[in-house]
Image (tube, rainbow, N blue to C red; front, side):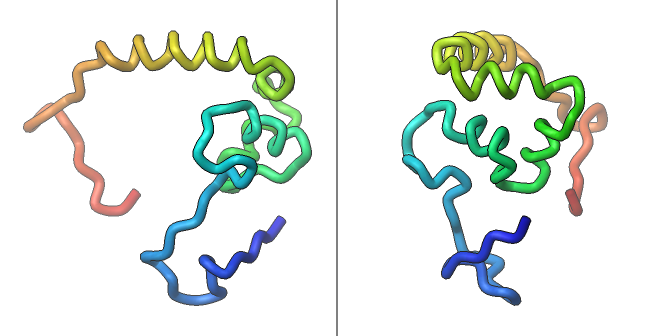
Length: 97
């Protein structure tokens, strides 16, 4: 799937910003999961979450159950909050991701 917007020209535009969730763009909801189920996920890497693999059932659940999404997202953020990033010689800095 190719999505073309005024913000994303065929060439250049590396500093342009475009919303990845258009409906509504500034609200935390299950819209991105509904987009995945409809095969309209952005970016392409997100669409890989719904491709006939092990995560399909979770994507389907989140697409219809915003309470489950909010609960699991909250749990994940709390867990991530206690992760200590590796720094100095123990860490890794990528110049090209």
